[in-house]
Image 1 (cartoon, rainbow, N blue to C red):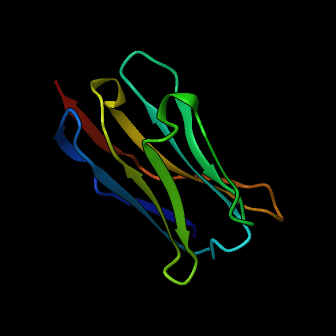
Image 2 (cartoon, rainbow, N blue to C red; image 1 turned 30 degrees about the horizontal axis):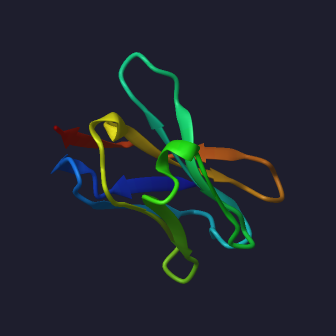
Length: 117
């Protein structure tokens, strides 16, 4: 059974930093695409950052230069380093894995990030 467990969310002031972690079990993250999404109240879930099995990263324009996605295949964990946080970054952040060979899509339970002004 595949499980993704996020951690690292919390309350931070504008300009602060947080590092989110997503630990996977039941599947090796190697060769798979991993992503972080976020959903603010009343808004649709949006893709924040994605990293492919080859290590290529993509970001939504609003976080470019501030957020960094990375992966540690040995620890079976993906990270999202978030710097220079803004109130508009407030949302529940979700980890996502797309399995390369099956196309199956897995989600974590989410972690709340709140940025105070």
